[in-house]
Length: 202
Image (cartoon, rainbow, N blue to C red; front, side):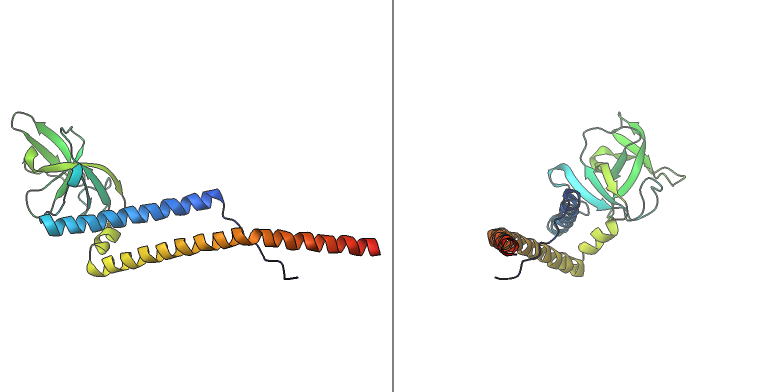
């Protein structure tokens, strides 16, 4: 009779859900960064907005304390803007992320200012506004900027392949444990029968 196999402790539902969320978030950020990098190379835009959605990184502290430097922002295209919205517009090479403080509907312009700035920006026509910030994740932009470099992209691909390999291996181990379960139960029953016979003999 072979030795009894030790069962591995099962993960709690909360731990499993946490891992799934963490992996999903990592894959989403990596996908967005890679997609954004590819779109930049194809279109030449610094903030591509395919399907009305884009992602960027706050490069300065002009929006402190609302948006920190290196915050990752998610931008959505909008048909109208209100005072208080955080708009993203582009008049040069780098998009500007500032809060709307005035709207001139007749001229079709908005005026913005950084929360940490004392002076307002020059009015911008709505045609130059990319969209407004839907939400942000503090400091995650530093990782996004690194991912968009060649070394960062290589590391992300290696990490994704490693996660895929681990997921496949875990699945195989679970299947092996499921197949081996009847054998373990048979050994337990055999051991129980031996103990009962020994007790009767004594």
